[in-house]
Each structure stands twice: as structure tokens, then as C-alpha cells.
Length: 575
Image 1 (cartoon, helix red, strand yellow):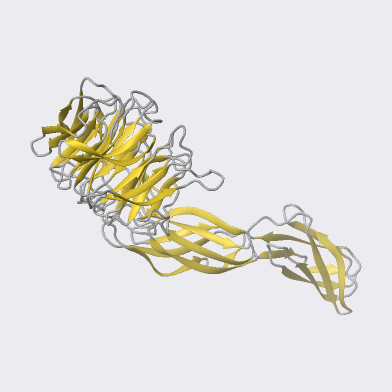
Image 2: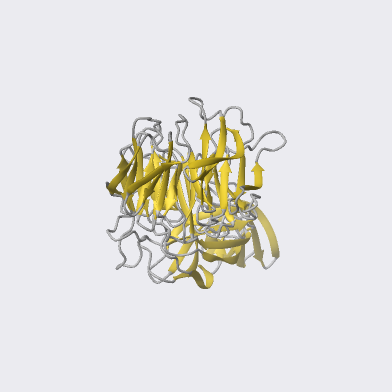
């Protein structure tokens, strides 16, 4: 057993978690207990199913080694400690809890076993008391026990599979059958609904998912769905199925399409979940019993998330809690059908495996804590008050959080929208008083809009975005002149100067206009060229005595405004 304190993150923050002895809670107020993930190495080299008994706080794990001689179901408590095992006659495959969790049904090669979950004792062997080499699947719906069976000695995934109903110590063939090892799902969310799915194997080009009404004496098939289009693309690659707490939604872990969200009639739900991270292949899915969360498991490599825990409502875009398993001591992916919740949603149990599929681990994970509201208060402002192209600009605001302060620094992000489109700015931390300043250097002259966002964290919901419209002006320039106090009519006179500008560097090859005003009038002189360092020289032969004013001008460019400067020289007669 170990505590895992790494590779746990949200889209907004990187969150390190630890374990508390009386349950797992997200990091929050200073007095809050630390929270986290606990990991137990499973003593199996294969895996088939997980069942969570919240009434007795037990987690059952079965393997699929297809050993006819002996087997066992591993039993763990909610703290991840192995507390026993249930002996079976051969390798167990499927498992299902009865409606009141008093009985655990376990399928094996010679039938279906039943166990008393309070006493942890075997109570019987019934239903199809004969050997089949292929693993059976089992489910409990409508107050009845159902199981699938492939009557074959090999090629279990490509033979015909039949659906049976247990009746006393015997079984009734329902007549429903199809190719492949058909899988079953049921649960307390819709106690009369039995879901059956077909895996994608050789000879099955367009697998199905279907629902049955199991409440009556006869099993009645309801909606059926196949997913391939007219060109044969988009077929289902079924790994797992889960029903929402109210029974109105069905989530499907599809290795080809990610997490599908369906309505009860198996049509696509109006709002879908965001895609899994790029490179992640869906392997498992589970809704929390309290209806708040969904866990989506995947197989991914490296630092790509293998597990996302997020609000069950797909319209709630709170950043998910992400887990990337990539260590030799914890597995590197979620096993198919490897997720289960406690009924109150306080713990998530996840089975991970390695790349070879011959080692397995049990993770006990705390979902996000109860979340509080957040909001931006007041209006955004800028520092300095006038935005200038190419010059640093601060967009200032204030964020207010209800509830406990997050353990990690709170950050806000911003996007600038201008004529060139959108540009995401670097996220910045929020000060203790809620104030923040997002830094930018506007690149274009004209209108720009800044949108500031807070995506939430483990304990806070996202805030509604705030925006600020800003008029970005050209960067100012300045001309400085140095002229002699006096000059002589008809003799050479030199004025030097420097052109400077804010923002981006001034362009090369600038020329300045030069005007001379004396008692004979105003005239344009030869323009002055500006050197790379901004300096320039003006040479003239004054034509009249008295006060002579020289005016130098820069017309400006796309990013800089124009500027002028004047110098007056007193010109006298020679001698």
C-alpha cells in the first residue's frame, strides 16, 4: 500500500494530494484534512470486474485467468486494505450485487456462485451448473439474475453468446443471442433496465448496444443502437457502460470514439462531454452514486491523463481532476470496466494495469470537494490608463472566492482579441486580497478586447468571464534639437538633434521635414536623414538677419505618432 502524491492535476492547477485516515477530502482551508489517492498492488495477473458494496464498505475484484481448478474474489475495505477473499471453484469473471447488496453473485466456468456479503460466506452454486470454458458475464435487474454464456472451448470472443435468466437452481434461455462475448450492465439507477453490449471482434463490423425491460415475467427488448454510418465508419468499440444516478443518461466508453453520452432511448444526449485528451483511448466509465460526478478512464502513455473526474452534468465545464498513471508502482492505464464509486460519491475505486496487462493495482481516489462560487468584482481597468502599441499594459481586476482558500495559488488567464484574432496571454497569480494584473504588450493599433477567465479549482466553480474594450494608440515619439544661440547671415549653421520613440523600434531610413521661418517668409529645407541611433544633423546658410526659427517634423508610421520640435537662432550680419 502506498500514498500517491503526484501526476494529479486540473486544467488550472497542479495539485498534490495526500491521504487522510478517516476519508479523502480535497485540500482547502488550513483545518481541512489532507486528501488524496491510495494505491494497493493486486495479487492477480488478470482482471475481469469490480463491484463496490457501499452497505458493508467492501470492494470486490475478480480476475479472468480461466483457471478451472481454483480461484478467488479479492475483498478490500474502503481504505484499500485487503480484508479477505471469497473462494470460487474456478476463475471468477463477472460479478453483480443484489438490489439490497446482501448477496454478491459471481460467474465462473461451472455456473453462478452466490455469497452473503455480511458474513462473507458462500451460500450456493446455481444457474447452469455445468462447465463452459468461456467466461460468463452476470447482472442483476428487475429482481432477477441474468447472465451471458458462450458454449465453446476456445475463440470465446468470436462464437455465439446467449442470454439466460436464472430461475431457482436452473436457468431459462431468453432466446436473445448474437456473435461475440456479450456483456451486461445493470444497477440501482434504473433497477428494471438491463443493458447488453456487443464487443467489436472478428466478424462483427457494427456492434450494437441495446436495453431490455426486465420488470415483467418476459424480457422485453427496448431501444437498440448501432453506430456505424453508411460508409461503415464510426462503429462502436465497446469497453464499458454506466448509467447516471437518475437513470436518464447512459455513458459509453468507446475505444473508437471516446466517451459517448446517450439519453435513455440510446440517442445522443444534447450536450456531450469534452473529448478525452489527445492520445487517450476510452476504457472505462462510471457515475457517482450521488449524481455529482462522472469518472472517465482511458489508456494513455506518458503524462497524458488516464483518468478524468468531473461534474456529471456535461454542461458544467468545471476543469476536470486529471490523473496520469505512468509509474511501475501504480500501472499506466485504467483497465476496461475498471471503475466503481461508493454510493455517496466520497470514494472512487479505479483498477489500473500495465502495458502488458499482467499486473494490476487498486486506487482509492477522492473526487473534488464540495465546490463554492467565484466571481469577478468591479470592472477591469488598465495600467497605464492609456494603452500604447508596443508598450507594457496591465489589465487589472479583482477575483472573489467563496468558501475555503485553495491550497495552490489561484490563477486567472486572459485572451486579447484584435484585428489579428485571439492571443492567449500568460496566466497570473491572484494576490491574497483577490487583486491581479494580467500583463500584455499590444501589437496592433486600434480596438482590442481583453477577456479574463477563472476556470475554477478543486473547491471553486469557474467565474463568469469579464471583458474590457481598449483603444490602443500609436506609440509617441519625441524630437530634441540642439541649436546655437547665434548665427551669421550667409555663414554655415548646424543644428543637431535626436528622434526617440516608445514601443517598437523606429523603422530604418527615416527622414525628417525641415522648415525655416525668417522675416522673409517660410521655406522648406532639405530633409534630414535619421541615423540608426536616432541622431540627425541640419545644415543651413541663414538668408536674413533677426530671429530665425527652424521646425523639424516626423510624420509618424504605422506604430508611432508624429512629432515636431523647433529651435530659434538670432542671426546677425557678418563683421
